[in-house]
Length: 367
Image (cartoon, rainbow, N blue to C red):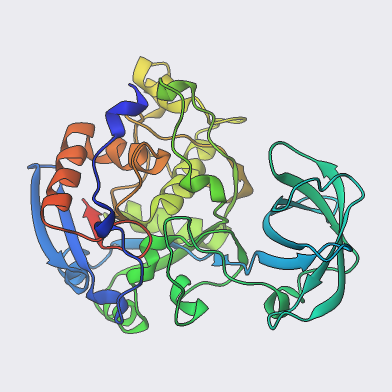
């Protein structure tokens, strides 16, 4: 398939610039894979679609305040966007400002614009505007006082507070972007789901900024997906497998949870190494012996699982997601689950009915 197969026309006014005042008041498009029917609800109606004994799995990664501001010794302003913490304690970052060569220093500012004692030194020039940075102090305890929450490039309005770009169950900090399907949940809605007999579990996948990049390769099989750090605990893996064996469905909250769970299932099936080409292998029949349901296995490691049409899902039975960017790997993933033709028809319907798109937009349930 080609990346152009996942393009669609989206009026700019349908890109949600702000979250709704009530998280669970968003609209919910429900896609029934069995009969190819689409219905239109509000998000709290999710209670009617998730049954007792089902297990709901969400990504609990928290967005780090990764946008930093600083000054060069000459006085010029510099913007830094942290991407990944490297093994040597240094950081991979996007650094604004030209001519920042190896050895250049940046004096960081706090949240009110005052210069701090923290200094970043460019230790390597990477591709484009990316640099490897070494800080003279550990950043872990400093980020809250010097960092700002980064918002996606298509959001041009400021937030009333940074917590609106966090899920209510977020815990470990490490993402450069929010796992946005989870933004619809409130504490009260989670309580109502548990009272209904739904099991709630979490995984962790630290979302990188590459999540916003379109697939540029003409043939999607030629695209190299970004690798992201993910984790599923032994305790959660055990409860998920028990729920599945008891007849419950596994409903993933967001594409990041899908990738984590499917990675865990592939690892339990004995597949090691890169998962970049597994969709292509599934489509060709190379992995037919590994396509039925597989239990999930605990793991903590980067995943480069690239899911697109042709992929055979091993463990996920349903998913909650938002509306994704054209030609994105996320749109390819949900199309693999629902069917490409059905999904693109659903997006056309969403545009016609003026659903709100992207991070602060409306939700979709595929079951």
